[in-house]
Image (cartoon, rainbow, N blue to C red; front, side, top):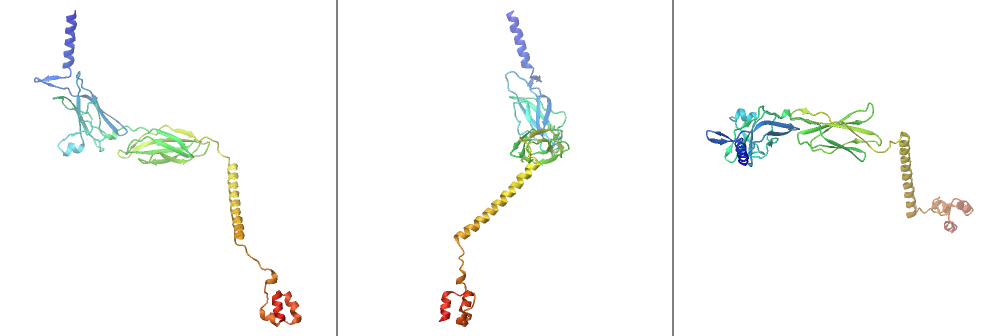
Length: 305
């Protein structure tokens, strides 16, 4: 009984060991990777395949690509992927290798020590035009009295169309185009107590396509809107305060000027209203008349003499 179990275990072990390796003309070879496919979302391209299984062994894979230029003008040359030659994972990020909007052929093979599998080629050529574009994730917050939009950074190929509006019947929808690297985004000033809604979609100029809009998200600034009469009253009060402040400054300037540099006024008796020649020609009996015309006591004495 024990011998039969040992025999069965040995047979199973040899079977598992021989499954991944085939013998052709007496030489052992690895089977080629199968089920090649490309997963492409938002201009990120990943080539995947079914792994080659060898118990207690690590399989390495090599990935190569070929564009239309290499296929037509460079004798069907294949270029190794800059990121996945070699790699241990059954996938390869080929985003940096796909640089043009043309069709690409992709292939992969397995390596184990000195054993190398045949190349397995993607059935249908890949073009990045077929990438799936999804709406960007976004976060809406309030920065003072401004709407602040934080959008998902999807890379330099992407532009964003941001639509926003007041959540009320018949409200006008505004659209803002956001270029790559201009994040976050400040929208318009908002009013307290009013709800605003925002939605966004992506656009990739290289392939001339855009995503669907995201689901609208709405926010409301806490507080109640000021009535129009109260707003007008506040404005009039501000204008009155400004006028009073300006008048006070003007009055204070005049007081300071008179305090520092007062103007000395002569009394009327010291003012000369007639010429000295006229005073000399006055007769003694006209002195009193001359006095009434504004002569000083010293000038009267000189006139008498």
